Image: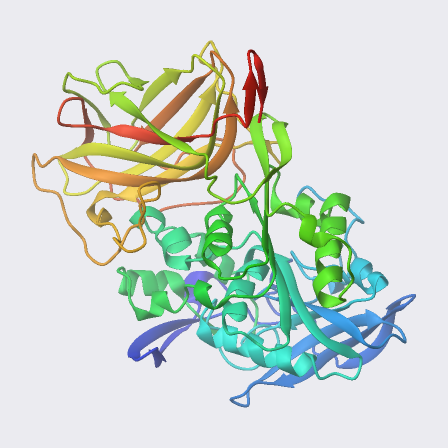
Amino acid sequence: MAEAQRKLRTKKEKFGDVEIETIYREIRRPSVETTEQFSFCPPFNPRTYITEPGILCEQDVSVTMRDGTIIYTDIYRPVGETNIPAIISWSPFGKRPGDMPTEWQTMGVPPGTVSRMAKFESADPGYWCHQGYAVANVDPRGVGHSQGDANLFGTQDARDGYDFIEWLATQHWSNGKIGMFGNSGVAMTQWRIAAEQPPHLTCIAPWEGTGDLYRESIFDGGILGYFCDMMLESIAGEGYADDTIAMAKKYPLMNAYWEDKIPKWKNINMPIYTTVCWNHFHLHGSLEGFRRSRSTKKWLRAHREFEWPDTYGNAGLEDLKLFFDRYLKDIRNGWELTPRVRLEVMDAYECDYQINRPEKEFPLVRTQYKRLYVDAAKGALSFEPVARESKVSYEAETGSTTFDIKFSEQTEITGYMKLHLWVEADGHDDMDLFINIRKLDENGNWLPVTVLDNPHPGAWGKLRVSRRELDEKLSTDFQPILSHRKEEKLKPGEIVPVDIEIWPQSKIWHKGQQLRVIVSGYYISEDWFLPLSYEVNNKGNHIIHTGGKYDSYLQIPVVPPKYQAGDYIYR
């Protein structure tokens, strides 16, 4: 059934103390339209059987939530073992894609690496059960054959996770310790469930998971994006799911519905091991979770490669096992000596300048924030303020402009950048700005970072200028965060300052290499494989003003060496 043909219905729901009319969309029906990996849902079939030597599966086990709704889970565990911990995979993707007629596989992961028992982006029972763990693959409310309607990544889903954890901890084989693990959507649910503080949830490992769904995905920079719509089309169930795109059009500004989907970071106080890929849209949420959670035992690892090969590779598995063994089995294995932060500092293509560099915090305390001032007349950046006023314009729908600087010494940029611009719309009352930060060689050739054999477009930022108001409580000098509480349209000839958050990066520029800022009126994707699209509102021309009273600049987080002696540099 095509998206346009799916039925819609509304119901009034309370989010906190506010009642809001929520739009729900009919989702794919099990066994009818579920031929895709994400949404595959085999027939309902409760049974207990041996999946492979040493692993037992209890399939389609019913679990009752506090309001009487029944959801279903598949539990894999080592045959004959008791007093063991469990790892939960909780997401809206089908819990048993391995039952598909053809073997599913993930980009960047060779066929056969992951067993057919694994849920997408989740712990593989084919590995973890042999390490003395149970794995519970869950179809949450509204997904698969589970009852009810799905409200994705909100409080209802988080409370269901609480109820499931407390049920799982009482099973006869359980040692009472529960962990959670997974990528992407499977990571996003962990932040929310952990914030509900289920007593038996002992630790979480959200490897790449969006935090604030509204700011990071639905309205990144205030521009409506459609990735969540694709995700909604990937869900199968017998009910409905809240239609986030329809809700975005009905409620384009921040309200209680959107706030309900923001994790309550301050409530998370258990051990956390999170990862980020510098080149993925889950980057922002994982860093926010690491920075804003209250846990005193939390670890961050940042890397260049995409989440899937990182998750299922040998190094990642062994590292994660140390973490789970420590907190789910109480094994004294020295995990606490793991550096709290480990960074891959990228260079170019598939080359990293450093791998797993140990740090104590993020952002790094020794960061020196420096401004690169924009000169529109020269298309350049400089460390010195530009005295002479000038401006540059480009066609709003398909045009762009660039500003470059050549570094006279080796320069590391690690952390949050922001772009401060003075802008004007010629022929329209709004502007959608798309920003990319790129590395060029000495001759001006692009040096992209390669991810899954694709050139990544570069560090990015976005802004709809009418959404330029900042949230004063959340923003810092290095990270401007939009309030999304009002729209401020532009008047003819009006020139306004804007601050655009550039999502974090860690990259080295060698002496003579160049940094380029691209400002455009369209999403710059190059050959990047992720299917991201945006509802752009551009007409006429964009004008950027620089110099004099128009102090446009790019602020960069320069990280000095830990030690330097002459030409020797240690980072």
